[in-house]
Length: 259
Image (cartoon, rainbow, N blue to C red):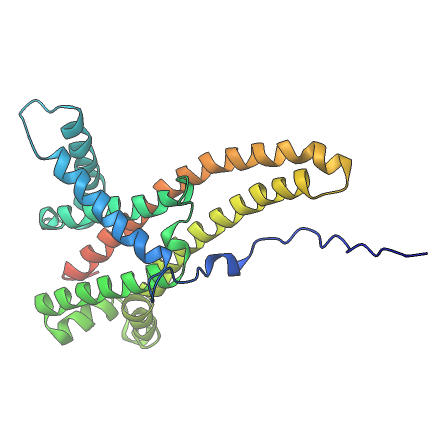
């Protein structure tokens, strides 16, 4: 008599951090790198098309581009930077569009990976940006003047400054690249991970589970995955907006005489 041993059901392999560590496609080029290039091309093409034939009475494409530009100019730059806000509007508009496209990659079919869900991408980009901001602050105030503006709160007793100045130095000069990058990374990572749980979990319940009630419940998992896809799209837009607002706020802080 021959006894055939069957392999035990390994169970559901839940998605985790390893699913965001994508292997190189060729050389050292990974999928997030290609998405950054693709996002830059999309943003350039969008603004080139919407501004190519500017008219006094805008068409649909021009209206879309001007609406995005007006949103950043009126709701972000003007309210956070101050009198010199106009020179930073093109940069902030491009930044908002670039982050938005990279975030939306997470729900676009055949891409389905938000670029900034990999922590190295927003952290490195943010370091380069804040280095540029600090150089602008040094040019405006001088090195010691910039350090004073960033770390020496006005109207505070000297004995409070002994404790507060090191905290301001850590917060305003050293930790800003980390905190803002982690905010964007955390939201993109958590949202995409949640979508993976519902979609892959629904697939496992439907195709691999031996329990009948799990097979019956699998459509609900897929339905929740669809619902959270729309919710994730909302979060992706909000995070691009928040990131741009905080960037404008930092520019205003760097250019201000006192903060």
